[in-house]
Image 1: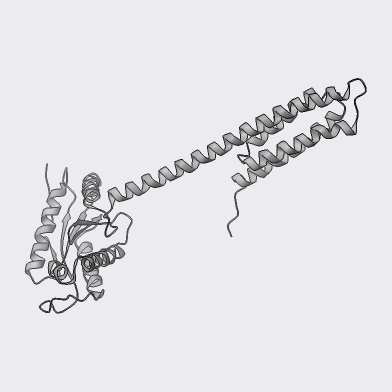
Image 2: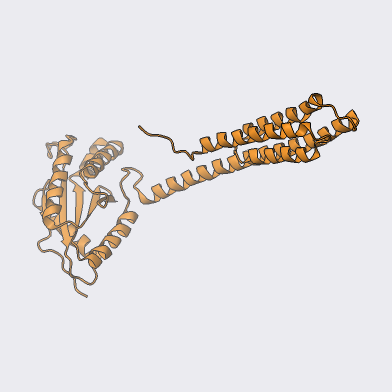
Length: 308
């Protein structure tokens, strides 16, 4: 069971209200014995200032009303012996004016701060949406080419420093142009979205990244992954897409939509691992998969070793 922390804003607000009420009660008792209540009036003003820390205009309004009532109540509790009543009333009106001017200004400040926080929150939300749009493909929701290029370069540098393997899968939807021409662009978009999701669902680790490389082609970055691990995951992805059962409309295809995958790996030991090297190797493997009949996984013939 989740317990709210003791220092939550809501609890702090009620703590401030309690302090203000206690101070007001103490001041009221003192005010009975002070003829003009000037010093006590300053304390009432202090109570209003403290109430502003609650950050709630309603709290400040209630405190101001309470202070006003207590300020005039002591007139009837103990009538002044040496000071005329009109002087006492004038004194109370002046103090009351100071209290309410302070309260109104404080309330306006609180509302302005609340509005500013709301605008900052909305601006932050818009910035997050813009950042999301700048890093992800608008159709499929996976990473876009820009993020892919940046992430692959980062992972190559990390693999070089840590002397760990890095694998890349290049994935192409088989006969997609025919599918798009026959079914239409909307159906083609739906197909790409489902394929992208099937690929993303197979990624096991937070560091793995799937991106739309361009058109019907996707790419998967697999940090700290050997060729064997890359091939195993590639086969799972291939089967997952085929299992979607998206029927291809071309009778010559005669079956579901499938994908071809080319896999390549960079091995540790190089001073610098170039992204272009692993992309080229994976592209070559993908071309072989297409040449060998599609709907299959092919691996770069030799792991990519680079030297200075």
